[in-house]
Image 1 (cartoon, rainbow, N blue to C red):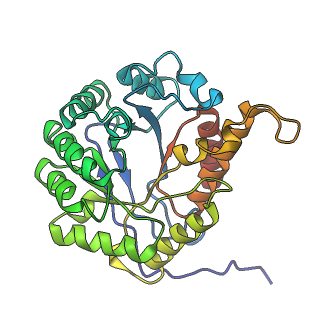
Image 2: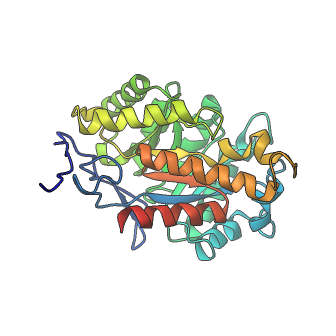
Length: 312
């Protein structure tokens, strides 16, 4: 007797959203099955990779991570173009590190000017992330939203103490909100409800569940991302049926394993961080991530090959 693969009948479906605008806008969502379970359902829109670009030259990056971008780190526009033209970025994630009150404390106007320059110079969607200082991000992202009206940026992290300000800016100026909570399915659902009540439409919302790097909380992150996807598809939870974005690169590359030099025990530092980033990304894809924010081109290459293999 022929073997029949057991199949699950899913009651839910991930909502469709479009990021960016124009010919290279990115479509996400519409999955009606668990990640890569193509024997059970469909994934019309495969996961996408966003490459990080910082608005100031990073001074704490591991040498291996800095090497591919060392000629452009002082120019975010050139950096973004290189990420697209040489490394095939589907999207750009502009990290507004200069706005951190503990760093340069750049003004909202400065951040908006940089964002507009980057977004105007490229034709792929732009994710704009603040410093995760909730009070400062509320000011910065509201100004960014205003100055980049109609470009459908992805603004984040939108958190519990600033969702009204950033959410209102996203609504008024036609952007997408990236709802960020600290690795907790109930908090993720609650923030989605709050943003919905504020007026953020379902096609303008993406979940950022927060993630840890390999060896630094990836197990818990995997569990929460997976549970969000299970609740969305198998339990029909309408407030969790959104695509997910995972801002993983900074979590991986800040670890001591990624920064430590060559050792007999851990091997070559130039390979170690790349492997850690690739494995972290793969795990998050298998859990349910739709967008990965990554850094090293070699890690990105490995992940793209995995996506291709799993969907061949």
